[in-house]
Image 1 (tube, rainbow, N blue to C red):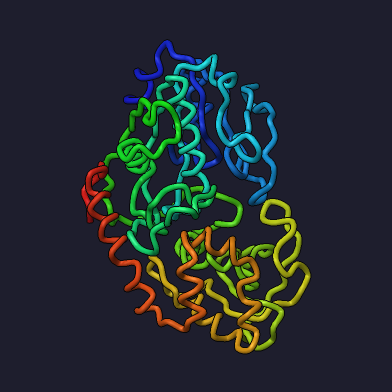
Image 2 (image 1 turned 90 degrees about the vertical axis):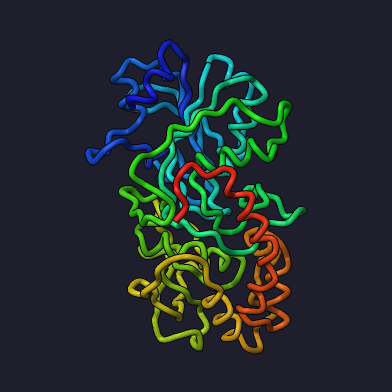
Length: 360
């Protein structure tokens, strides 16, 4: 706040925030803290899951007002992913303060991209309040041209190994904004007492279906299952910590996805008993592994043709069609990993230019 408040003095401010935008152990929200300091906060832009982070994945986020402060809340998830000229007209600066989890397909960084584009087009200062990356690894396939979507907007690996502040610097530096100009006025309020490789445990769940540290660690490796017929536990109180399907041969652990408001109201295999694997106590240090994906693909046996129930979605999450085709060919994890090493090596070199914190 000592750094931020002088930057906002006399400015009309918009916030891109959610339930993770807290300042201290008392969980004071950034909006409340700025209002207490008489900062002129004109509006809040709400990403996926909404301002308070309670909406289902993919659910429409509606415009509203914050009950506590009366500040208008403008949805930038759904049809309107980028603030309009009208929505930015009464602002001088937009502050982004959202906890990311370090995976390319986690949509808060896509929201950041679109807000940066809008700020570039309308000459607004964009300030990032930086936070640690809890999945601070560089690994996985790099997104290829032709596979850009809201779950993958940049040619970066599945685990990008950047904070949101560093990623914003990369987006600007590599001129990835599809706007004129192709960079925005950017300022990053950096962290103290953290460097790359330091562990970090989130004080607030970043989205409804990442309720704890285990789910956050497993999320990069399990999210690819969203393009398959295997449930990751949506519709349970332990999403991204279990795997399974109604096929009894999948495993001895059972769970039944149901409609759970605040988690998922229409999960895969809703109301069906699923058999599979319980990963809640699984010892996993983090990073990205294909172990689970390849294991369940093999388990599919004669039903392999039905494993990729949403092949296009799987490819968008993976960043290309290569991974799916390699799995169909029967390649091992080592053989698959070898295929993405050249692009990963080039990315690691580029990444060095944008780091704000000592690397490992």
